[in-house]
Image 1 (cartoon, helix red, strand yellow):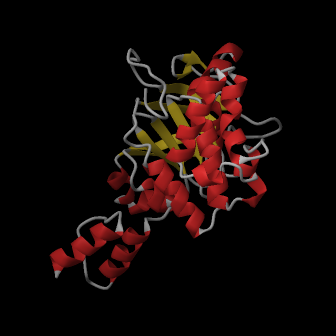
Image 2 (cartoon, one colour):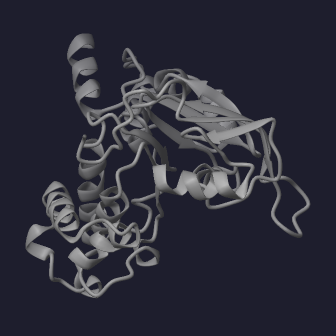
Length: 287
C-alpha cells in the first residue's frame, strides 16, 4: 500500500463522477451548481479554476461528502452515492479534503497528536497508529516538529500538518480547496512541494485554485462559470484561449503573461509557455 493511498487494486471506472449536479444555498436566488458534470479518474491530477462565486468550493465540499447535493442524475465518490447520507459518510473515509485555512483542521495539542487524530477515531491499533504517524511526519518534513503546538507553527507548517492528518487515513482522492490562499510565499512553496510529491503515488487530486501557475502543472484543467463546467481539457488549451480567460476573469501563469507582453512588443514566442523554463527555452528558440 502507498504511503497515502488506499489499496484498491480492483477499483474500476472514475473515482469521482457527477452528472447534472445541482446545489443552491438557503435564501439564494441562483444555483451555486447548475447541472454540473465531472469525472475524475484514479491517479489523475485535475485543477479546478474559476472566478469567485463560480461554485468551486461548493463542488469541493460535495465531492468530499461534506455537503448534500440539491439533486443530480448521478453523483458518486469512490463508488459511494453522494445523494444518500450513508454514501456521504462513506465518501468521507475515501476522500480527504484540505481547506485553505489550516486552523479549521488542527484540533490537537501538538503536531503528532493532530496527525494521529483520524486514525484514533477509526480505532486503529496503537502500534499501527504510531507507525503510520511516523511515516506521515517524515513524508511531510514534520518529524522535528512532532511535539510542537500548532499555534507555534508557521503557516506552511500548519498546512503541511493538516495535509499529513488528512492523508494519515489512507485515501483514494484528495480535494484541496485553495490550500495556499492564506500563506506567505515561503509557506506556499512548502505546500506546493508537498502536493507535487503526491502526483506519483496514485492518488487522484482535485486542486481548487485561483493561482494559474498552480494550475499549470495539472494533467487537466476544469473551469467553472456560474455553477457549470465551461472548459474541461488540456491546460494549454485553456491558456491559449485568451477570450475565454477574459470572460472567466482568469489570467495566465506569470511566464505566459510575460510572453504575452513580449508578443505585444513584436517578439512572438511559441506557446503559451506555462513555466519560466519554457519561457527561457522559447526565448532561446526565437533568438
